[in-house]
Image 1 (spheres, helix red, strand yellow):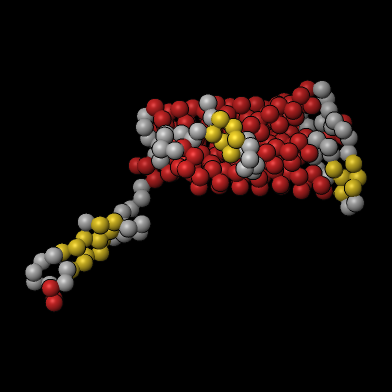
Image 2 (image 1 turned 60 degrees about the vertical axis):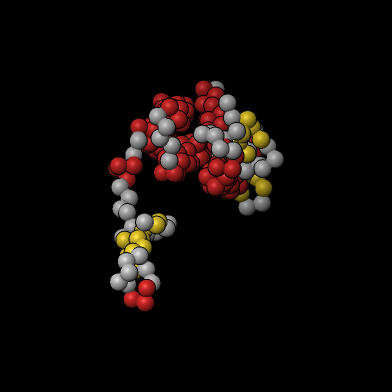
Length: 231
């Protein structure tokens, strides 16, 4: 029996085959059952994604209601997602159930919780100028690129171990610090028109200096020269 990336085939060396050549029987590819491939760590990863989505919902609710309770609720899901993200890796290594599916799930969950959700919360907080849109879009795109790079380089960086030795660029969960900055601004009643630094009118649109923190965070994520040792 031999296997390829798409299908399996068996080689029959029976003497009755025509001209003495072996007979090749192509077997259908094995069905991928997502439910059977799911492990406890993957359920925790989905908890991470659910927290990110809940944060998005509460950020939108804040824009509708103007209630700081909704804003703080949106922000609170960031550290909760961080806990799920921490536990899923520990559980996967503890149970020796690391898989390609789990790694892909982890990246998709992270981009929701630590990429899209912080950007949405920043938009809700008042970063709505034309240049702010570009800054937040850059931030999310950097997060997507950083996770894609990690997925294709994880095996090389792990050097045969069960986890990578160091991160290239800052890990995307560090963006939870940006959520902390927004929470502090909300606590000091510095949202909307009262954001720190005010707004600069540059050409066709406005730029809030606070959005430059998101540009800095995105740039650090995709840095190749910045190596952070994994604990």
